[in-house]
Image 1: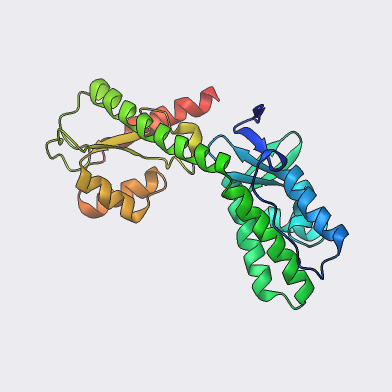
Image 2 (image 1 turned 90 degrees about the vertical axis):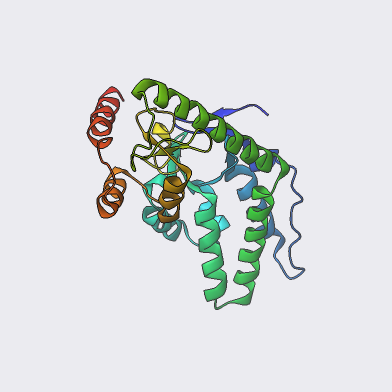
Length: 247
C-alpha cells in the first residue's frame, strides 16, 4: 500500500484498501443508505502507521447517521489530542466515534436508525480488526519496547545514573525502566526524547503506571506526596522549553 503522509501522522491505508469482510445489512434496510454507509467507511476511514483508526469529518455525518451540523458539534467536543488535520479535513480517532455510536444505539428512539448505527458499528469493528491494522499495532508496540530500551541506555550514559532517579535506591541491573514524564500517548512528539523520562526500578515504575501519570506536574505531585526526589524536574523544564522553541 502506498503510504499517505500527514503532518504528524503517517496514514498507510484507507478503508477501501482493507480486506475485512463488509458486514451484511438487515433485509429491511434501504439499499441507498447501506451503500452510503459503506462508501463513507471506504473513503473516510484511515489507518495510521501505529494501526490506529481515524475517521474524517467529511463522512462523519453518514457514519453517525446524523446531520452535518450535529457531526461538527461532536467534533468540537473531542479532545485536541484525538483530532488531527490532514489534506484540509479534520480527522477524529475511531474509538471516539465508536463510543458515540454505542451511546446513540442505546438512546435511539427509532428501530431503523439503531439498525443503521449497528451496521456502521460493524464496519468500525471490521476496520479495527483488519489483519493489516492488527499487524501495524503489533509492530508499533514492539518498536516502543525497542525505543524504551534505547532511551534507558542513553539516559543512563548521559546522566551517569547508578540509582533510581526518584527513590535514590540502587538501580536494578535488570528490569529498570525508562518512564516517560510526558505520556507518549498524549504527547507523541516527545516520545523519543531522552530528557522526557526518568530511569527507575520496577517497583517505582509499577506505582507510576498504576496512577497513569500524564505530565510533569502530575509526576512532581506524585514525588512530593511520597517524599521522592524531584531533581529531575528543572532540567526537564529547560529541555522542554528548548524543544518547544525549536518547533
